[in-house]
Image 1 (cartoon, rainbow, N blue to C red):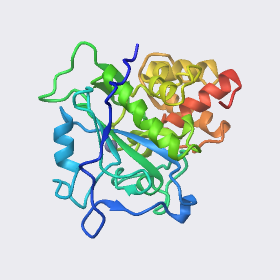
Image 2 (image 1 turned 90 degrees about the vertical axis):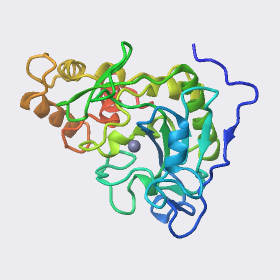
Image 3 (image 1 turned 60 degrees about the vertical axis):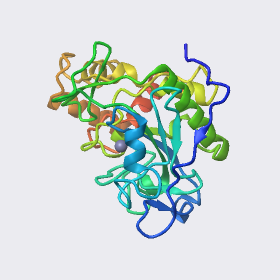
Image 4 (image 1 turned 120 degrees about the vertical axis):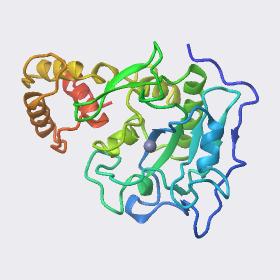
Length: 286
Ligand SMILES: [Zn+2]
């Protein structure tokens, strides 16, 4: 059960990034997206707390001044809360370099890349297990979009999920055109380069944002290569043995599925592939 927000919950806007030269914020949305954001990009901070993210990105003199920002950063507890650095009416610089895809999984161009077209939300997690960052017993296993690397990821907290939903509701109130399919991870935009946010609880967050418990979980069954192989086999695309090892046959099966589904043929298991598998299996376009 997701806990209710505290009665005095408020998004903290005191660390707003000012406009002007040298600041990682741009006014309004561009003509390339008809003056509005097209989607929401979820990130993780790779920090232990919100204060560290605030120092990196927030206010007039952040450590990454003029280089990177985000619209929001969601802490791990109600006590930490949520910071808003950039109004969703303006653009934050949140998706960095190597943005191969845009909000709908199509190739991105300079004018339609993530930061120019999507709202960026940081969520505080330390990210994946690595040297100096040991995995806890409850960490999530999830593979990269190319299926070849598996990471162990720190899970998001219950209070954080409630706050992520509150942020999502603030965005959707402003931009109701952004539906459940407008949400993706930084790893979806930069599938060969970024790991955030592998293992993200999309279904839980979206069900809360849109107050719709019927939004399907199209993600968690296919976090790992074995689940992806099973899905391809069910759909009639032979991935080779269902063994969790993503080799050339699995890659070819994914590409064949992408071609049939009208997706970009790139061998990356993105959130758009997750939705396409769902659509094939239940015949919906929810
Ligand atoms: Zn990111």
